[in-house]
Length: 393
Image 1 (cartoon, rainbow, N blue to C red):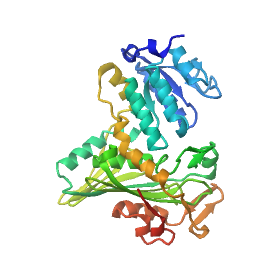
Image 2: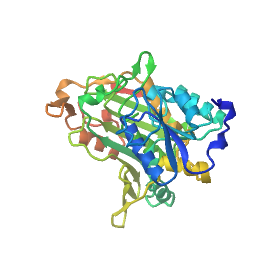
Image 3: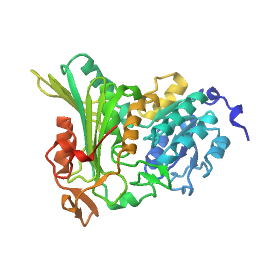
């Protein structure tokens, strides 16, 4: 078996199709499995291995035969993978990324890249030292709407930008928090997890808002305020907001997994002469400007694994580098260091029996109001969120 030192970085990324190993192929990993198959049909990659504790069945693999092993490093060695897609529990991201990096294997690392800023830096610095390429899996940042909105802002189409809001009103039932031992946890066996609404399921809202502000690096952040709450019987937060102060503006993102009527999350750019609403999962943009009628535009999207492959073979610009997620990781760190989430009073939420999920009364409007006004929950008229629940980082 060859050793990592015998396998230089550029030796396995010269031409299509690039051999890919997927670590974590169930749950959200099944999306990556389907996406790899899609790109395999285009001749860009080929699936050569799957790393799972329990091997995938032939049906799960769509009839394709690939190497499988719970030993990630051994699988990378035996398959000669050029790319590893890592979609495993959050606390494992850094160690697995470094196992791949030491073997010269390039990475698509699922978000959040790490559960703490220290672990993020260990991963990013290790990847850089190994001279491999790492793409962080914020799929919304592959949307062509992101540079288009940035260009409108730069052109002054909205006047002066006042701030950016983000809103996510999703629903998750009680089984969601039982799907894995780390689900809904801040820590597990003494290890950071930080599986909260803003750091995992609706992390794209935070990352996209930061990207539209042009404040993506760690040094771009000058202050962070958090309010973490929970309706569910979990350790982490399910209804929260964060306000980030950057050198350019204020960014307030509010999110819940206890929505009354779940809807598409969005980011809202406020300007003195207009506003832009970006439904980032749909790549849909609404531009509203003074003196002009509203304009709605749908954009395309570049898949991040496809972008990584094109970068390795043709030198295309990589869309989501580790350093460009530094500001997001500052938010993760602020949430990690904040006091444990406050349990909402029982009269603030209802249990929907048939769906086995908890719904916070009025939370949909509250999340929207926070994004619209750039205010924290405690600054809005809601009895269960008071200033004592604000943590400043």
